[in-house]
Every structure is written in structure tokens, then in C-alpha cells.
Length: 616
Image 1 (spheres, rainbow, N blue to C red):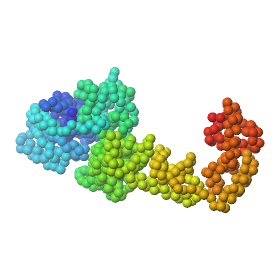
Image 2: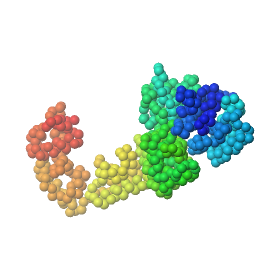
Image 3: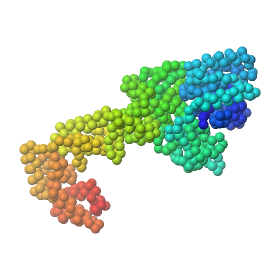
Image 4: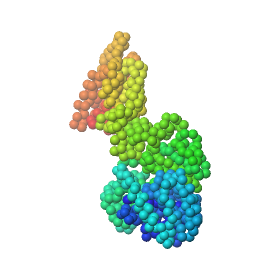
């Protein structure tokens, strides 16, 4: 099924022509019928002689309702550009044509309406004007037909031309990722929430779960209807009404996107290429405030120009768009930007969920050029450079792609040696260059640490993670990979380069021996007069010779282990462990007893209840 959209100046006969073609009046509102002017989107449908069914979206032509026109033009396969014979091309004709051009609509027909009220000479002049207007646009090769909807003259020829044109179109692609931009949301008594829109990207099925973006709310499809007929399944390229359960219609509004759950992450910034219209009243400047139109959504946005400081009318440029609200967009999606009065330009999304780019940076521009014209693998590779290490779901979010597209690209890039994976339970991916940088940072950090603290067995794990600037899960994957490469080794709480050993000089050996003797003399109440270098003490702690239980108190390991064992024995079967009972066991002071018990609390052996302890 295909979607046909009308376009053209107000009062040039769009709704009248739709009714002549289909027998359906697309104007839904009483105000529209009373005034004879479309102000909202209208819908109709038609089965052509070939058996092909088409949906028709009728858009308003008045300049005050250009936003509604934009919302109806997304997902259009074929455009019908209407020009009244008595007036010829008018301002909104040209603006609508420019919008179709910006949205990439390249298939259509130019229809000269009201042919019955002009003579042939005038009609020929208007035809020449239309031919000139279409030059250098996406509809440059469109066939021009003249009709009279009031008298039915040329309507059969129009249907034949439309049938012939649509018969040559490929079926709308099914990528497995359905997207339905909502253009209407309402409630029907006994049925609940109903939304309508033009489906692209994938199939919707009755009973299936969907996600409403950008809110993230979930719902289930109760039923589907196409052209007032119930359907179990609806394919891309179809105007569809969806009855949703599990959500109120006020929680779904025009501009929202109905899609499959858990694959599309809404963006607040995306990279793009933009074409500024030749008739734009002014250049597009850096930090230009605009209204952004994507799908059926409009939202305030700011344009950051990435190359130069402005983009002149009639030229294109690289930009990043920062939106006021989250919007669900995918790579390749078309958009239009306007100010309060004029359509300024439009283009295509290159990278959703983009990080902030440096302006006038050759590397940034080169990457955008690659994304604009590159393969699926190039696109995913460039996105990975921004967020590495990354999982497949994270790369899916970053690129607005399907899981399968990312998975295919990853497999190819791995086989080419351009990326590598780390981790086992959770795989993370990095570019080969990114992995080398990460590995070199790890080696350099540990090497510097070993040089600064030669007596320490290794760097504390949390300090090492801080140097690598990684979250917990990718950090663990990185450590696992470096261990497998025999680059690093770990203990319970430290990490070191393979080959690093801490050893003492003869003088240091004498100093540590003296210290150990001092704290062993009164093993349960060791001296707190610390006559030892702080690095030597840390060495003894890491080697396991001593246990530090407080700022000042250090026990010989054997003495501490004996205390811990006896304290545990005293607390079995739920018995209370008190400071007094521990003091009596070891004949030590409150200071030492409290330090040991607090250390056992920190290890999770005991838990404090009031002034007493119990085994956990």
C-alpha cells in the first residue's frame, strides 16, 4: 500500500480533487466544510484499476497552517502538487514544493486544477510556468496534467497516471522496526485510545506490545483498522488507525511515535546535513533558534553550525541540532526547520544521540562526510568512536539503528580488524585504535604508580578505574582482557603490571623486622608509636604481615586472626558480643577492643546493635 499526499496553495482545489478521486470529503471539521478551506489534515482512500490501494493525505494550503502541512507530508510516497489554472503558481505552491524537496519526495504529479474556467492559451502559459517552477527540484520530472474536479474532466486520466506511477514504485521497505508518527489521538466510547498515522519501517500486529516515544510508556495493540476495515497485521506504507489498550488517549498526542519496544532511544542532539532554501530570507547562523519538524512532531531547537559561522540561502552545510525536548529520530530521517514565519531549510539526520562536536574541526567534518556517504559499517564505526567501549544495545541507541543492523556491522568490522571486543559475560566493543589507547593508558598508569611507589604490590583497583575513566562493567571487561593478554595481574584489592615485584633493601629489611618485633611484644595491645616509614608499613600490609584496624593501631596478622577467630566463637548461636567480653578475653583496653570490632563491622563479619554486636 502507498500514501499519496496533496500540496499547493490555499483554494487551489486540493480537497475538491480528493473528493472527485475518492468520493470522500477529506475535510473532517465543521469549520472546514463551512469555510471551504482545509485547516487540519484530511484523509481519504482509493483502489486503483490495477488493484493497488492508496491512502490520500490532504494538507492545508493556507500559510497559517503550514505546520499542519508539514505534519502530513512525512511518509508520503507520491505527491500531488496542485496549481489552480486561474492563478498559476503562488507563494504557498512554491513553499510546499520546497518542503517536498527537503523531505526527499521525488515521485509525483503536477495537477493544474480548474481548467474549465480558463481558455487553452492561458492553460498553456500556466503549464510553462509550472514546468519552470519544477526545474531543479525533486519533482523536476513530474508529469503535468490538467483537470476540472467540478466537471470530472481529466479525473480518469489522472487515476490512470497515478496508477502507472505507483505501479513502478518498489514496496515500502520493511526493516523490522515499525514507526508510526501520530497525527491524531482520540477516544472512542467502548474502545478507548485510538491513534492514526502513516506506518513506516516495519509491521504492526494486533495483540503486539508497542512503546510510545518520547515518554517511554508501553501499550498493547487491541485492534488495527485500514480504510475502515479491521486488519490483523499492517505493513509499511499504510495509513492506519490503532486502538491501544493500557493507556489513555490523553497520554498519546500528535507528534508522539508508536514503535516496537526497547530499540529507539530519543535524542536531544543529532548531527545532520542541511540545505538552506534559496528563497530563505536570511542565512542560517550559528546558534540560530528554529522550530524543528520531524515526523509529526514540532519542537524548539538550536542549530550549531559545525563548519563556518553561517550557511547562505541556496547552500548546504554540516550542523548539529540541539532540541528543547527529546525526540525519537533515526539516521536518514528527513527534517525541516522554520522560524516564526518562513521555512528556512531541511535535511537528513546523520547521527542521533550525538555528543557535542568541536566546531571547525577537520576531523569532525571528515567523520560527518563519511557518515553521510559511507556504508553501514562506516556509520557504526564512526558512532563507536564517540562512545567506546560500547555494547551492541548502546550502539543501537547511538545510531538509531536496529539490533540486527548493528550486529551485522560489528561482525564485518571485527573480521576486518577495525574493532575488537572485550569481556565475556557482557561484550564491549572498541575501535582498534581506541583499544590501543586504553591499553597504553593502563600500562602507563601502572608504570608511573610503580615508579612512585616501588614498595607497593600494586595500585588500588578503584584508583586504577579512575585513571581509565570507565564505569564498573566496561572496567571489569577491560581488566579481564588485560589479564588474558598477560599485561596485568590482580590481587584482592590491587592491580599491577606483570613482572612487577616489590622488594626491600637490606636496610629496609632491618627496619621492618624491628617494627614487627615491637608490635609483637604485646601482641593484643601493640605499640602505637610508629617508628616506620609509611611506604614500608603499606608494604607489610599488602604482603600480609600486618593488619591495620585503625588510624594508629596495627596488629601482627597472626594476632589479629586469633582475635577475630575467638570473637566469632564468642558470638555463635546468636550470643551478644560486647566490648567488655572481648576485653576480658584478650586482656586489652577499650581502645584496642573497639578498633577490632569496628574493623570486623566493616568486613561484614559483625553488625552493631546499640553498644553490642552480633554475628551476621
